[in-house]
Length: 632
Image (cartoon, rainbow, N blue to C red; front, side, top):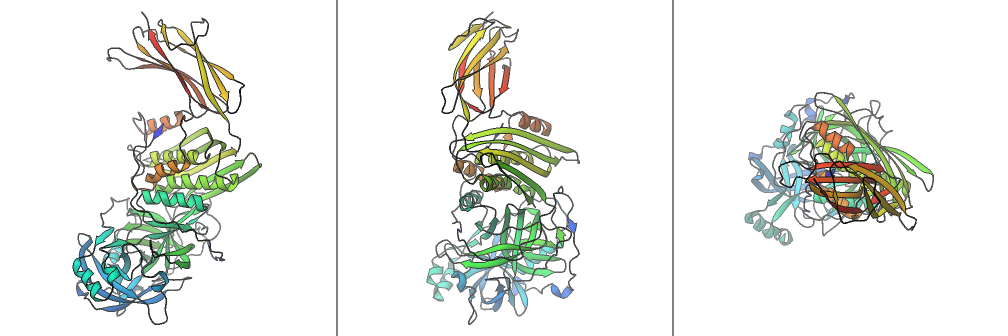
């Protein structure tokens, strides 16, 4: 059975944007990509840039306080707008050893409202290029902690340009270490006070700017749960409702980013569209740079790279203002996620993984099939949790009690190229919220596969089929009697039995809201060599005895968004084959099981177990135990 060893604690709370903007958003993508296994990305010819497209860079050693320049970013739509920049100084080794941060003050040009749109630097400005005399100084990437301010940090252009030199294909690298919160020296704080910026001077730290996360396919309640999970994973995003994006195909027209334009790093397309929003810093030949800081600090990556459309800047003086944007036309693949930013290989189509859901509402006789294309398989567990729950919400149209039957299949490739297929069926019932637990079960299973300790695996396809209804159905064990070697059934707290005895249990169960009992017989045989052993004869249902709330399940799954995952484990799995076997054979919620466990009184020999399981038509809960001593 899959278990979760730990969950990460919450770092800080970020409010979910629940703004519902009734705007017609054009060009949200083309038809979804046909389901093809993940593999080598396709390449679509992109316009070849001249060498002059690569910006000249301002060396950090030449940067001095008082230098003035101009930045560019998008407030609304897709056209970059200019703003003023004044250099306040340089913090050496602020982000990491050898990684400096340029401290700046931003302001608006006369008649413009770029910085003022958010009351200071806002989420979504990450990557906004800053120029001095036409040369690239770097990208806006940090802002003062706790509410907007015009004071921020710029990632030096030279550090970002070094990302262009990394190999085009490499394995996922160990993440570099960074400081996402940087202490502002007293000298800088005094300089702010001298400039009359007393509120800014009172705040001692700079934070890496959060990224707006455009989410298509989730309602407000599920969106709030996603934000909660992201907070617990320390993923620095602000989730907001967004539009649907389609995965690109070989016939999709690709766009070319522009410095200062919107940039979206898409981890999934289709039914559940997830895209982190920022700004393009530079375009150089067949590559582009953005963000000025990492998305997940994953090293080699495989996100989609897209344009985006900004609908508004949501001003929030308490937690920080943020861009509200939707994903736009594709540009290529984000193939590097590094300390100083992310890199796009322009014209390269991300090799997505199809995640197909088919949900049938048995009450309304309504069925819907949808697909999410996942660009980075490390987000598969999260897509499972929220994509499945969102699909249920569309067809079930409620988050309440009921029952569901589930069948899913995971197809993948093992180390060396050998294929594997994992299929499970199960039933679920809940009086609280019936859709969260089956979704979380699949998410934790994918997490166990992707983070197994035996060999690297690639998931190529996931299919999920389910029927759901509002009628709560459940069987509860209320009694168990035992017959020894055909003698009359008795209710007992303990039994003495001879070796090789047949133990037959007659189990009585009551359906929910019914007094019409059902009985089922199960039998096990005591091993012939078990003389002198003691143990327990138990009858149990596969369903949970204590039912957690849906919020508890989502909170527990916050680790799904972390680089290390949930460190999910399957008990006693000696190998990847053993892991697959344990998952396939894990108890079902509709199992009724009779189990005999006998221990050696001296502890010298392992426990001996015998069991029989019978599948029922409903989820079974409850437990009855009887002590057993083997005579002789």
